[in-house]
Image (tube, helix red, strand yellow):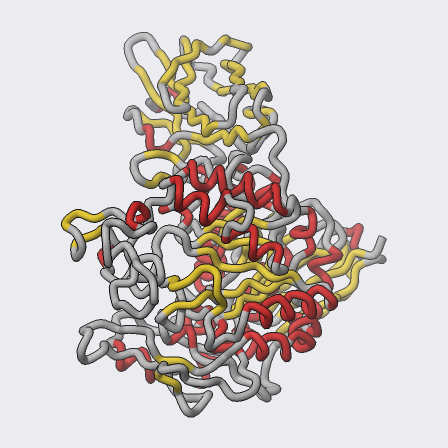
Length: 613
C-alpha cells in the first residue's frame, strides 16, 4: 500500500469535486481521484441501491461524473485496481475532506452528496433572525396564577422538584411556578432590547406536566399559561415589535391524560383508552387493549400516535381548521417539531405542504441530534433536508463542536466539523440552522463550559454550583460561545437565563426559573452581537491557527482564543488602515507593525474586528 501513498481525493477542493457541497437535482458533479500508480479505478455509488462506475484516466487522475435527477443522498468512495491488489479510498471519518487509503471496504466511511429539490426554499427572514428559547412555566409570570388543582411553588426562586414521586415511582414533572403568556408579553421590551426578533416557546398546549410534552388538548392553551386569546394578543404585540413566535409541535405522541386517550378519565369525552369505538381509537397502537400499548420510550403516560392514520393526519395537518393551520392563523410564524426522527416521512411531507400552503414564510425546524443529511432512523436514511420535508434542524452537532473546542482548544477539528455540515447541508438549510449551546434537553452551557463533574447523584446535581474560580472561567467561555454562534450563519438561539450565566445539569436543573433584576449579565454583549449578526456578509471563511480560530464573514472577522495563554497574531496587511475592534471580551489590543496589523489578546477571550469598506 506504500506505493499508493500519494493517492488523494478532497471533497472540499474544486480540483477533486465540482461543484462542491450539496447540489440541486439534475446537477452533474465531477469527481476526480489523484492516483498515478493505479492501473485503474472505479467509483462505488449508493443511493438506495449500489452501482459501480468505471473511472476514466486523465493523466495522473481518474475522473467520473455523476448526476441524479431526483432528491436523494448519494454516497461514494473509490476502488483502486493494481496488478494483483485492490485498495479503497474512503472519507477519513464522517467529516468529509481529504480521504484515507485502506485495504478494507468500509461503506460506513463514504463521502456524501446531498441532492435536493430544485424548488427547495426556506424563509428569507431567518438569515437575520435572533432567537430566544422560553420554557413558559419558568420564564416570567404576571398577575396571580390560579393553581387549578396543580402543585404550585409559593416562591419563584425555589428549586424545581427533582425527586421521584412517592406514589408513581418516577419524576413526574408536576410542579409549577406559574410562568404565563402575559409574563412573556410583559418582557417583550426586554427581549427586543437585547436584539431578539424570534421567540421559540416550548409547548404551550393543555397538558398534565410542567414541560407539556404530554399534550392533553392541541386546541387549547394550558390554563396555567393563559387563554387562546392571550396567545393571539401576545402574537399581535410581538409582531408590532418585529418579533415572530415559533411553537413546539409534539405529534409523535400525546399524553395518556388527554382528551384523545383519556386513561385518567379527566376529560368529558370517550378517549381511545375508554372504548374501541372512540373516534380516537385508530390514533394509537394497542397490543393488549386497553393497558398495553405502544408508548414513547416505554413511558406509559406518553402513548405513541399512528401519525399516518388518515383521521390523525386530517386533524393535525389537512383539514381547513387543522392544528398546524389554526395556530399559524392565530399568529405563530412556524413550528419546531419535537423528535422529528420519530415522525414518518409521509407525515413530514404532508406537514410541509400544509404549513407552506397556509403561510409560505412559516419556518419548520426539526429536532434532530445528529448530522441531518445522513441521519438514519427506523432502518432507513431520512430525507429531512432534500427540500420536501423540513426547512432546517436544531444544530446539535455545532453545539457539541463549540463546547468541545472551547474546553479542548482544537481549532482544526472545529473547522472540520463545521465544514462537514456546510458540505452536507443545502445552503438554504445551512443558513437557517437553529444554533445554540443550551436547551431544555441539555446541561446548561455555563455548567458544561465550567467542566462540572459527571456521575453525580440527583441530590448532588441539585445542589452543585461551580466554584468562584470555575464560574469566572465558565462565564468567559460562555461569552465566547455565544460570540461564535452570532458570527456563524444560521439562527443564533439564546436559551432563557443563559444571559444571566445560569447554571444547571440536565432536566429539571436546566429549567430553573429566570432571575429578574440581576444586573450581572451579558445582555449588553448580546445586544452588540445581535447587531453584528444582522450586518455580517454572506461569505464564510474558517481558519485555524494553533488553538486560535478565525471566523471571517465578509465585513466582520471574529478571532477566538480559548486557551489559557495570551494570543499574539499578525493579521492581513489589508486590515492595517481599515480594521477596528468592534466587540471584545477579556481585552484585545490592535497595533500596527511594518508587516501588518498586530493583535494581542488575553487568555480565554475573543474580539470581532470590523473591516470598514
